[in-house]
Length: 136
Image 1 (cartoon, one colour):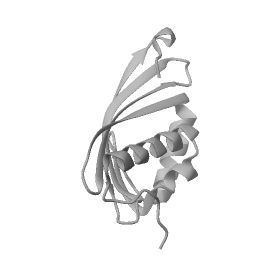
Image 2 (cartoon, rainbow, N blue to C red):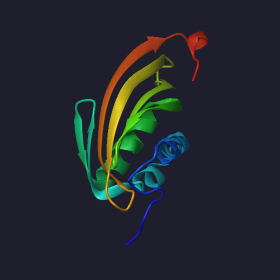
Image 3 (cartoon, one colour):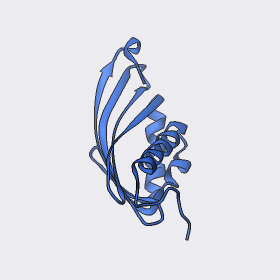
Image 4 (cartoon, one colour):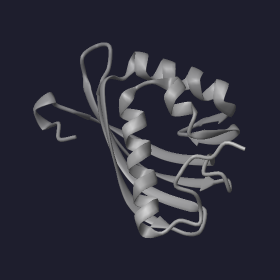
């Protein structure tokens, strides 16, 4: 069976490592690469969308990054337990009309024993900003 290090149960150090790996993957804006961190049947709630499985993750992220240009994400550790991690995040992007936004939110993650994320629940709010106010 394939594994994705680090594996649960997480320590503070390995939880932060997992968070940095996620941040790096998302900032690559490569939907296939990002999807490989999740179980084949991963369950997401992203804003008002429910996404299930890697194929839907790839489709969702492809559309996301076609519409969220100059995307840049920063994740921060919030808490963890044996196989769960909570993060706070913000990211900035420009839409196709050239308007800038900062999205704020929290994510709750649950991992399987092989280190793949099986659940991701994201609560996200967008705020329109001026380009000069960017800080991510």
